[in-house]
Structure formats: C-alpha cells, structure tokens
Figure 1 (cartoon, one colour):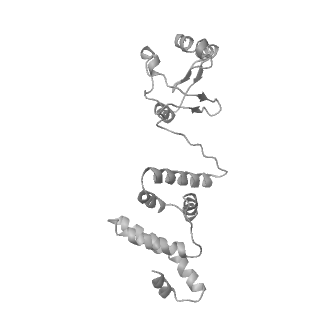
Figure 2 (cartoon, one colour):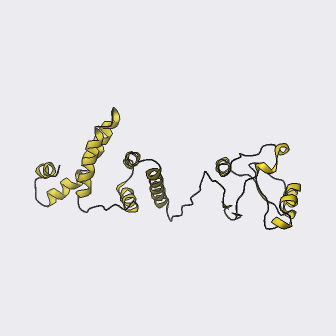
Length: 209
C-alpha cells in the first residue's frame, strides 16, 4: 500500500499496481486492495506466470520481505476480460489468441502459425520434416500463407515425390523407410489420373521422374 501511494501519487495518478498471484486471495484482502485502486488476480496458472516473468528482467516474487521497487515490471495496459497485459519493456514472450468455429480449423491454424514461426526462426529444413505429419489441406494452406503457388492436377504430388526421394538420402535408419513410404503414397493420385486418361501408368510416371 505504501509503495502504491508513493509511486502512484499526483504525478503518476494514471498509474496503478496489478498483483497476479498463483494462490488464493481472501475477500478482506480483495476489499483492501480495491479501495487502494490495486487490481488483483488470483489462481493464475503456472505457465501464464512463467510467460509473465519473461516480459521483464526479474522473476516472480515469493517473499514480501524482499519486495522493492526494483522488482516491479511495467506494462501500459491490463484488461480484465481476458487479462491482457500489454506494452512491455524488453519482452521475451508473446501470447497469440486463435479463434475458430471448429476444433479442426483451430488445429490447422495452430499448425500454420507454428510452421511460420519455425520458418522465420530456423530454416526450411525443419519445416519440411514437420510437414510430413500434416494432411494435404493443411499443407496447401501453409503454402498459400508462405506465398507459394501449388500447381493443379498431379503436378504437386509428382514434385513432392521427387523432393522426398532426394530427402530420403539424408535420413538414416527406420526414418528413411517412413519417408519412402510417404513419397510412394503420393504417386497414387498421378497413377489414378493417368489410368483415367487411358495412358500407361508406369511409362508416364517414369517419364515425369
């Protein structure tokens, strides 16, 4: 309370304290904090506390005896609906809220977001390894978001088969068999299209390869 009165005086009357606690806060303490203009949040999740501590230099405070002004973090705003804390100084963490009508759509958005972050932070090789576990619809959405153009008919499957065949040489042990199986499964669509058009499957596939 004394720190709030000292730091939030007439010169800083638009500022106030926000207390975020992993444990419970009793009603009497809530009443005292509210009268003093302090926003208090209780039962915060451990993972959210870890993210908050990454937004400023110091970590969480465990003992009130050690509480000083140097341990305070700073944020421009904090809303009560979802408890958004914004305007950090030197942030090292971020929260992205995804909204979707179905769980399937949310999973696709999560995959696209993850691959975009990995693509920027690391390289395309790691993205390629992760793409092997996704469905074709998600792969198409990722390619669209990355500004890539996917050709129609069976061109995409043939090119992907060629890329995976080259990538198989870099993989060792049992993982190589998985890459080979996935690459061969992509040829089902070109073979079906070739058969429907009246051409020989094997000759056409060999010609494209």
